[in-house]
Length: 280
Length: 162
Image (cartoon, rainbow over the protein chains, first blue to last red):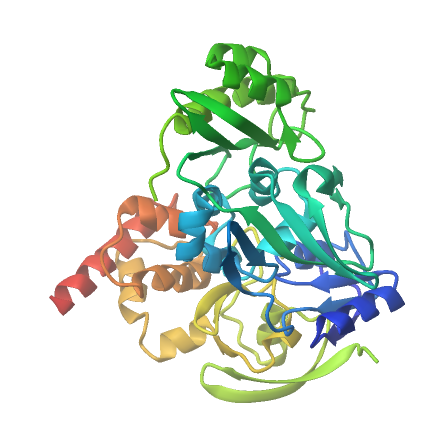
Protein backbone atom coordinates (compact mmCIF):
# COMPACT_ATOMS: atom_id res chain seq x y z
CA UNK A 1 0.00 0.00 0.00
CA UNK A 2 0.95 3.66 -0.18
CA UNK A 3 0.78 6.31 2.56
CA UNK A 4 -2.24 8.58 2.84
CA UNK A 5 -1.38 12.17 1.88
CA UNK A 6 0.47 14.25 4.43
CA UNK A 7 2.28 17.58 4.50
CA UNK A 8 5.99 17.79 5.15
CA UNK A 9 8.04 20.27 7.10
CA UNK A 10 11.81 20.13 7.42
CA UNK A 11 12.64 21.67 10.79
CA UNK A 12 15.94 23.53 11.07
CA UNK A 13 15.84 24.13 14.82
CA UNK A 14 14.47 22.31 17.82
CA UNK A 15 12.23 25.31 18.64
CA UNK A 16 10.77 25.17 15.13
CA UNK A 17 10.01 21.45 15.49
CA UNK A 18 8.42 21.91 18.91
CA UNK A 19 6.29 24.76 17.57
CA UNK A 20 5.09 22.60 14.66
CA UNK A 21 4.14 19.79 17.05
CA UNK A 22 2.28 22.25 19.28
CA UNK A 23 0.42 23.75 16.29
CA UNK A 24 -0.54 20.45 14.62
CA UNK A 25 -2.07 17.97 17.02
CA UNK A 26 -1.70 14.94 14.77
CA UNK A 27 1.77 15.72 13.44
CA UNK A 28 4.46 13.06 13.71
CA UNK A 29 8.20 13.44 13.97
CA UNK A 30 10.30 11.87 11.24
CA UNK A 31 13.73 10.75 12.45
CA UNK A 32 15.08 7.54 10.91
CA UNK A 33 11.60 6.60 9.75
CA UNK A 34 12.27 2.87 9.86
CA UNK A 35 9.14 2.16 11.89
CA UNK A 36 7.12 5.26 11.03
CA UNK A 37 7.28 4.92 7.25
CA UNK A 38 6.34 1.24 7.47
CA UNK A 39 3.22 2.17 9.44
CA UNK A 40 2.45 4.97 6.95
CA UNK A 41 2.80 2.55 4.03
CA UNK A 42 0.39 0.14 5.71
CA UNK A 43 -1.91 3.02 6.70
CA UNK A 44 -1.71 2.00 10.31
CA UNK A 45 -1.05 5.67 10.93
CA UNK A 46 -2.11 8.67 8.89
CA UNK A 47 -0.77 11.92 10.33
CA UNK A 48 -1.54 15.13 8.42
CA UNK A 49 1.99 16.45 8.88
CA UNK A 50 5.47 14.97 9.16
CA UNK A 51 8.03 17.14 10.90
CA UNK A 52 11.44 16.02 9.67
CA UNK A 53 14.04 16.57 12.39
CA UNK A 54 17.00 15.23 10.37
CA UNK A 55 18.09 18.76 9.47
CA UNK A 56 18.43 19.91 13.09
CA UNK A 57 22.12 20.29 13.90
CA UNK A 58 23.75 18.85 17.00
CA UNK A 59 21.39 15.94 17.63
CA UNK A 60 23.81 13.33 16.28
CA UNK A 61 26.59 13.68 18.84
CA UNK A 62 27.95 11.09 21.24
CA UNK A 63 29.66 12.81 24.17
CA UNK A 64 31.17 11.78 27.49
CA UNK A 65 30.80 14.40 30.19
CA UNK A 66 32.15 13.27 33.55
CA UNK A 67 30.55 9.89 34.18
CA UNK A 68 27.59 10.41 31.84
CA UNK A 69 27.50 9.31 28.23
CA UNK A 70 25.06 11.39 26.22
CA UNK A 71 23.82 9.98 22.92
CA UNK A 72 21.99 12.42 20.65
CA UNK A 73 18.56 11.36 19.43
CA UNK A 74 19.63 11.31 15.77
CA UNK A 75 22.62 9.02 16.29
CA UNK A 76 22.00 6.18 13.85
CA UNK A 77 22.42 2.53 14.78
CA UNK A 78 25.39 2.19 12.43
CA UNK A 79 27.06 5.23 14.00
CA UNK A 80 26.54 3.73 17.45
CA UNK A 81 27.89 0.37 16.25
CA UNK A 82 31.12 2.05 15.12
CA UNK A 83 31.48 4.37 18.13
CA UNK A 84 34.52 3.83 20.32
CA UNK A 85 32.88 5.90 23.08
CA UNK A 86 29.87 3.58 23.16
CA UNK A 87 32.03 0.44 23.06
CA UNK A 88 34.04 1.69 26.05
CA UNK A 89 31.45 3.49 28.13
CA UNK A 90 28.19 1.77 27.21
CA UNK A 91 29.22 -1.82 26.41
CA UNK A 92 25.63 -3.03 26.87
CA UNK A 93 24.51 -0.88 23.93
CA UNK A 94 27.43 -2.14 21.85
CA UNK A 95 26.46 -5.73 22.65
CA UNK A 96 22.82 -5.16 21.72
CA UNK A 97 23.48 -3.31 18.49
CA UNK A 98 24.16 -6.29 16.17
CA UNK A 99 20.80 -7.80 17.15
CA UNK A 100 18.88 -4.77 15.87
CA UNK A 101 17.33 -5.24 12.44
CA UNK A 102 19.56 -5.44 9.36
CA UNK A 103 22.38 -3.29 7.92
CA UNK A 104 20.17 -1.21 5.57
CA UNK A 105 17.80 -0.42 8.45
CA UNK A 106 20.61 0.28 10.92
CA UNK A 107 21.99 2.86 8.47
CA UNK A 108 18.83 4.96 8.86
CA UNK A 109 17.24 4.05 12.19
CA UNK A 110 18.06 6.27 15.16
CA UNK A 111 18.58 5.47 18.84
CA UNK A 112 16.25 8.28 19.89
CA UNK A 113 13.55 7.08 17.53
CA UNK A 114 13.73 3.54 18.84
CA UNK A 115 13.35 4.66 22.45
CA UNK A 116 10.56 7.16 21.67
CA UNK A 117 8.67 4.57 19.59
CA UNK A 118 8.91 2.16 22.56
CA UNK A 119 8.21 -1.08 20.76
CA UNK A 120 7.91 -3.61 23.60
CA UNK A 121 9.98 -6.16 21.67
CA UNK A 122 12.79 -3.73 20.77
CA UNK A 123 16.29 -3.90 22.20
CA UNK A 124 17.15 -0.28 22.99
CA UNK A 125 14.27 0.57 25.34
CA UNK A 126 15.25 -2.46 27.43
CA UNK A 127 18.92 -1.42 27.36
CA UNK A 128 18.01 2.07 28.56
CA UNK A 129 15.98 0.53 31.38
CA UNK A 130 18.73 -1.93 32.34
CA UNK A 131 21.26 0.89 32.42
CA UNK A 132 19.02 3.09 34.58
CA UNK A 133 19.52 5.87 32.05
CA UNK A 134 17.51 8.98 31.35
CA UNK A 135 15.70 10.47 28.40
CA UNK A 136 16.20 14.17 27.70
CA UNK A 137 13.14 15.87 26.22
CA UNK A 138 12.48 19.39 24.91
CA UNK A 139 9.04 20.96 24.81
CA UNK A 140 7.32 24.33 24.97
CA UNK A 141 7.99 24.46 28.71
CA UNK A 142 11.69 23.77 28.34
CA UNK A 143 13.98 20.80 28.85
CA UNK A 144 13.45 17.95 31.29
CA UNK A 145 15.05 14.60 32.06
CA UNK A 146 12.88 11.51 32.54
CA UNK A 147 14.25 8.42 34.26
CA UNK A 148 14.01 5.19 32.27
CA UNK A 149 12.01 3.59 35.09
CA UNK A 150 9.35 6.30 34.61
CA UNK A 151 9.51 6.58 30.82
CA UNK A 152 7.75 3.50 29.41
CA UNK A 153 4.06 3.76 30.23
CA UNK A 154 2.30 1.24 28.03
CA UNK A 155 2.18 -0.32 24.59
CA UNK A 156 4.02 2.20 22.35
CA UNK A 157 3.26 4.76 25.05
CA UNK A 158 5.86 6.88 26.84
CA UNK A 159 6.01 9.76 29.30
CA UNK A 160 6.69 12.18 26.43
CA UNK A 161 3.99 14.83 26.00
CA UNK A 162 2.57 15.16 22.46
CA UNK A 163 4.55 18.37 21.90
CA UNK A 164 7.81 17.11 23.41
CA UNK A 165 10.81 15.86 21.46
CA UNK A 166 13.28 13.32 22.73
CA UNK A 167 16.67 14.94 22.12
CA UNK A 168 19.14 12.61 23.83
CA UNK A 169 19.70 9.53 25.94
CA UNK A 170 21.85 9.90 29.06
CA UNK A 171 23.55 6.78 30.28
CA UNK A 172 25.77 6.22 33.31
CA UNK A 173 29.24 5.47 31.93
CA UNK A 174 30.58 2.01 32.71
CA UNK A 175 32.92 1.74 35.70
CA UNK A 176 35.61 -0.90 36.30
CA UNK A 177 33.15 -3.00 38.35
CA UNK A 178 30.31 -2.68 35.81
CA UNK A 179 28.97 -5.93 34.42
CA UNK A 180 26.60 -6.23 31.48
CA UNK A 181 24.70 -9.04 29.82
CA UNK A 182 22.55 -9.27 26.72
CA UNK A 183 20.77 -12.12 24.98
CA UNK A 184 17.75 -12.51 22.80
CA UNK A 185 15.92 -15.21 20.91
CA UNK A 186 14.47 -14.41 17.49
CA UNK A 187 13.28 -16.56 14.63
CA UNK A 188 15.69 -14.89 12.24
CA UNK A 189 18.74 -12.78 13.07
CA UNK A 190 17.66 -9.12 13.18
CA UNK A 191 13.98 -9.78 13.73
CA UNK A 192 12.13 -8.46 16.73
CA UNK A 193 12.76 -10.69 19.71
CA UNK A 194 10.48 -13.50 20.85
CA UNK A 195 12.06 -12.78 24.23
CA UNK A 196 15.12 -10.71 25.08
CA UNK A 197 17.02 -9.66 28.18
CA UNK A 198 19.34 -6.71 28.81
CA UNK A 199 21.08 -6.58 32.15
CA UNK A 200 23.56 -4.61 34.20
CA UNK A 201 25.14 -5.20 37.58
CA UNK A 202 28.16 -4.29 39.64
CA UNK A 203 30.70 -6.79 40.86
CA UNK A 204 31.20 -6.94 44.62
CA UNK A 205 33.78 -9.62 45.34
CA UNK A 206 32.34 -12.82 43.93
CA UNK A 207 28.78 -11.48 44.24
CA UNK A 208 26.69 -9.13 42.17
CA UNK A 209 25.04 -5.98 43.39
CA UNK A 210 22.77 -3.37 41.74
CA UNK A 211 21.41 -6.02 39.37
CA UNK A 212 18.93 -4.66 36.83
CA UNK A 213 17.22 -7.16 34.55
CA UNK A 214 15.16 -5.61 31.74
CA UNK A 215 13.15 -8.04 29.66
CA UNK A 216 11.66 -7.22 26.27
CA UNK A 217 9.05 -9.04 24.22
CA UNK A 218 7.20 -10.24 27.33
CA UNK A 219 4.77 -7.39 28.01
CA UNK A 220 3.47 -4.01 26.91
CA UNK A 221 6.73 -2.30 27.86
CA UNK A 222 10.26 -3.41 28.67
CA UNK A 223 9.96 -4.91 32.14
CA UNK A 224 12.23 -5.20 35.18
CA UNK A 225 12.19 -8.63 36.80
CA UNK A 226 12.72 -7.32 40.30
CA UNK A 227 12.28 -10.56 42.26
CA UNK A 228 14.79 -12.29 40.02
CA UNK A 229 17.16 -9.33 40.48
CA UNK A 230 17.00 -9.80 44.26
CA UNK A 231 17.54 -13.55 43.96
CA UNK A 232 20.53 -13.05 41.68
CA UNK A 233 22.08 -10.68 44.20
CA UNK A 234 21.71 -13.49 46.77
CA UNK A 235 23.90 -15.53 44.45
CA UNK A 236 21.58 -18.24 43.12
CA UNK A 237 20.79 -18.44 39.42
CA UNK A 238 18.28 -21.26 40.05
CA UNK A 239 16.44 -19.13 42.62
CA UNK A 240 16.48 -16.19 40.20
CA UNK A 241 14.92 -18.28 37.43
CA UNK A 242 12.30 -19.61 39.88
CA UNK A 243 11.57 -16.04 41.01
CA UNK A 244 10.86 -14.73 37.50
CA UNK A 245 7.52 -13.02 37.92
CA UNK A 246 6.73 -12.34 34.28
CA UNK A 247 3.26 -12.80 32.82
CA UNK A 248 3.75 -12.68 29.06
CA UNK A 249 0.82 -12.97 26.67
CA UNK A 250 0.58 -15.28 23.70
CA UNK A 251 1.56 -13.52 20.49
CA UNK A 252 2.16 -14.42 16.84
CA UNK A 253 5.64 -15.69 17.67
CA UNK A 254 5.11 -17.89 20.73
CA UNK A 255 2.73 -18.91 23.47
CA UNK A 256 2.93 -17.37 26.92
CA UNK A 257 4.27 -20.64 28.33
CA UNK A 258 7.05 -20.78 25.72
CA UNK A 259 8.00 -17.17 26.37
CA UNK A 260 8.12 -17.78 30.10
CA UNK A 261 10.35 -20.81 29.63
CA UNK A 262 12.63 -18.90 27.25
CA UNK A 263 12.88 -16.02 29.73
CA UNK A 264 14.45 -18.49 32.15
CA UNK A 265 16.82 -19.80 29.50
CA UNK A 266 17.95 -16.24 28.75
CA UNK A 267 18.39 -15.45 32.43
CA UNK A 268 20.83 -18.35 32.78
CA UNK A 269 22.80 -17.13 29.76
CA UNK A 270 22.83 -13.51 30.88
CA UNK A 271 23.68 -14.38 34.49
CA UNK A 272 26.77 -16.15 33.17
CA UNK A 273 27.74 -13.00 31.24
CA UNK A 274 27.24 -10.89 34.37
CA UNK A 275 29.76 -13.05 36.21
CA UNK A 276 32.46 -12.11 33.68
CA UNK A 277 34.27 -8.76 33.55
CA UNK A 278 33.42 -6.70 30.45
CA UNK A 279 35.93 -7.07 27.67
CA UNK A 280 35.91 -4.00 25.49
CA UNK B 1 3.37 26.51 5.71
CA UNK B 2 4.06 22.81 5.41
CA UNK B 3 3.44 21.55 1.89
CA UNK B 4 2.11 18.37 0.35
CA UNK B 5 4.54 18.53 -2.56
CA UNK B 6 8.17 19.57 -2.43
CA UNK B 7 10.87 20.37 -5.00
CA UNK B 8 13.92 18.17 -4.64
CA UNK B 9 17.34 18.04 -6.32
CA UNK B 10 19.51 14.97 -6.07
CA UNK B 11 21.88 12.88 -8.12
CA UNK B 12 20.75 9.45 -9.24
CA UNK B 13 23.45 7.21 -10.69
CA UNK B 14 25.62 10.28 -11.22
CA UNK B 15 23.01 12.32 -13.07
CA UNK B 16 21.38 15.43 -11.59
CA UNK B 17 17.65 15.15 -11.14
CA UNK B 18 15.24 17.94 -10.18
CA UNK B 19 11.61 17.01 -9.62
CA UNK B 20 8.57 18.03 -7.63
CA UNK B 21 7.39 15.11 -5.51
CA UNK B 22 4.47 14.41 -3.23
CA UNK B 23 5.71 14.31 0.36
CA UNK B 24 4.22 10.83 0.65
CA UNK B 25 6.18 9.36 -2.27
CA UNK B 26 8.69 6.78 -1.14
CA UNK B 27 12.15 6.73 -2.69
CA UNK B 28 11.53 3.43 -4.47
CA UNK B 29 8.27 4.67 -5.99
CA UNK B 30 10.06 7.85 -7.11
CA UNK B 31 12.81 5.81 -8.75
CA UNK B 32 10.40 3.44 -10.47
CA UNK B 33 7.48 5.69 -11.37
CA UNK B 34 9.08 9.08 -11.93
CA UNK B 35 12.52 8.08 -13.22
CA UNK B 36 11.60 4.75 -14.81
CA UNK B 37 14.36 2.93 -12.93
CA UNK B 38 12.50 -0.31 -12.37
CA UNK B 39 15.49 -2.37 -11.26
CA UNK B 40 14.68 -1.60 -7.63
CA UNK B 41 11.80 -3.89 -6.76
CA UNK B 42 8.89 -3.41 -4.41
CA UNK B 43 8.12 -6.46 -2.30
CA UNK B 44 6.68 -5.90 1.13
CA UNK B 45 6.65 -2.09 1.44
CA UNK B 46 7.42 -2.26 5.12
CA UNK B 47 11.14 -2.85 5.28
CA UNK B 48 11.18 -6.61 5.70
CA UNK B 49 12.09 -8.08 2.31
CA UNK B 50 15.00 -5.92 1.11
CA UNK B 51 14.01 -6.03 -2.60
CA UNK B 52 14.07 -2.20 -2.74
CA UNK B 53 17.61 -1.82 -1.34
CA UNK B 54 19.49 1.10 -2.91
CA UNK B 55 22.52 3.16 -1.92
CA UNK B 56 22.03 6.65 -0.48
CA UNK B 57 25.14 8.74 0.20
CA UNK B 58 27.23 5.58 0.00
CA UNK B 59 25.18 3.49 2.46
CA UNK B 60 22.49 0.95 1.65
CA UNK B 61 18.96 1.90 2.67
CA UNK B 62 15.42 0.62 2.20
CA UNK B 63 13.81 2.44 -0.73
CA UNK B 64 10.39 1.80 0.81
CA UNK B 65 11.33 3.25 4.23
CA UNK B 66 12.89 6.42 2.85
CA UNK B 67 10.81 9.27 1.45
CA UNK B 68 11.87 10.85 -1.83
CA UNK B 69 11.67 14.25 -0.15
CA UNK B 70 14.35 13.12 2.32
CA UNK B 71 16.73 12.58 -0.59
CA UNK B 72 16.96 16.30 -1.42
CA UNK B 73 20.69 16.90 -1.89
CA UNK B 74 21.51 13.21 -1.63
CA UNK B 75 23.49 10.89 -3.90
CA UNK B 76 21.39 7.86 -4.77
CA UNK B 77 22.67 4.80 -6.62
CA UNK B 78 20.40 2.04 -7.89
CA UNK B 79 21.14 -1.37 -9.34
CA UNK B 80 21.12 0.28 -12.78
CA UNK B 81 24.00 2.53 -11.72
CA UNK B 82 25.93 -0.23 -9.97
CA UNK B 83 25.48 -2.41 -13.04
CA UNK B 84 26.35 0.20 -15.71
CA UNK B 85 29.50 1.29 -13.89
CA UNK B 86 30.75 -2.29 -13.76
CA UNK B 87 31.06 -2.12 -9.98
CA UNK B 88 29.09 -5.33 -9.47
CA UNK B 89 29.91 -7.10 -12.75
CA UNK B 90 31.77 -9.90 -10.96
CA UNK B 91 28.90 -10.40 -8.51
CA UNK B 92 26.38 -10.54 -11.34
CA UNK B 93 28.51 -13.12 -13.16
CA UNK B 94 28.91 -15.23 -10.01
CA UNK B 95 25.18 -15.11 -9.27
CA UNK B 96 24.48 -16.40 -12.74
CA UNK B 97 27.18 -19.09 -12.71
CA UNK B 98 26.15 -20.45 -9.32
CA UNK B 99 22.39 -20.28 -9.82
CA UNK B 100 22.15 -17.71 -7.04
CA UNK B 101 18.92 -16.50 -8.61
CA UNK B 102 15.89 -18.14 -10.05
CA UNK B 103 13.02 -15.69 -10.44
CA UNK B 104 15.41 -12.76 -9.89
CA UNK B 105 13.02 -10.60 -7.92
CA UNK B 106 15.32 -10.29 -4.91
CA UNK B 107 18.52 -10.10 -6.95
CA UNK B 108 18.94 -6.30 -7.32
CA UNK B 109 18.61 -5.83 -3.56
CA UNK B 110 20.71 -8.88 -2.87
CA UNK B 111 23.54 -7.70 -5.14
CA UNK B 112 23.45 -4.17 -3.68
CA UNK B 113 23.60 -5.60 -0.16
CA UNK B 114 26.38 -8.04 -1.02
CA UNK B 115 28.40 -5.25 -2.64
CA UNK B 116 27.96 -3.17 0.53
CA UNK B 117 29.67 -5.96 2.47
CA UNK B 118 32.39 -6.71 -0.09
CA UNK B 119 33.27 -3.02 -0.56
CA UNK B 120 34.65 -3.11 2.99
CA UNK B 121 37.43 -5.38 1.74
CA UNK B 122 38.73 -8.69 3.00
CA UNK B 123 37.01 -12.06 2.76
CA UNK B 124 34.02 -12.22 5.11
CA UNK B 125 33.12 -15.55 6.70
CA UNK B 126 29.97 -17.35 5.50
CA UNK B 127 28.44 -16.39 8.82
CA UNK B 128 29.18 -12.70 8.17
CA UNK B 129 27.75 -12.98 4.66
CA UNK B 130 24.56 -14.54 6.03
CA UNK B 131 24.29 -11.85 8.71
CA UNK B 132 24.74 -9.09 6.14
CA UNK B 133 22.06 -10.43 3.79
CA UNK B 134 19.74 -11.38 6.67
CA UNK B 135 17.46 -8.48 5.74
CA UNK B 136 17.00 -9.68 2.17
CA UNK B 137 14.43 -12.34 1.43
CA UNK B 138 14.90 -14.87 -1.36
CA UNK B 139 12.02 -17.29 -1.84
CA UNK B 140 13.69 -19.40 -4.55
CA UNK B 141 17.27 -20.36 -3.85
CA UNK B 142 17.42 -21.29 -0.18
CA UNK B 143 20.33 -18.82 0.14
CA UNK B 144 23.21 -21.33 -0.05
CA UNK B 145 23.97 -20.49 -3.67
CA UNK B 146 23.86 -16.77 -2.87
CA UNK B 147 26.33 -17.19 -0.03
CA UNK B 148 28.50 -19.29 -2.37
CA UNK B 149 28.46 -16.56 -5.02
CA UNK B 150 29.27 -13.75 -2.58
CA UNK B 151 32.04 -15.77 -0.98
CA UNK B 152 33.54 -16.66 -4.36
CA UNK B 153 33.63 -13.00 -5.42
CA UNK B 154 35.18 -11.98 -2.11
CA UNK B 155 37.95 -14.54 -2.70
CA UNK B 156 38.43 -13.43 -6.32
CA UNK B 157 38.71 -9.80 -5.33
CA UNK B 158 41.13 -10.54 -2.51
CA UNK B 159 43.21 -12.70 -4.87
CA UNK B 160 43.16 -10.07 -7.58
CA UNK B 161 44.48 -7.54 -5.09
CA UNK B 162 47.11 -9.81 -3.54
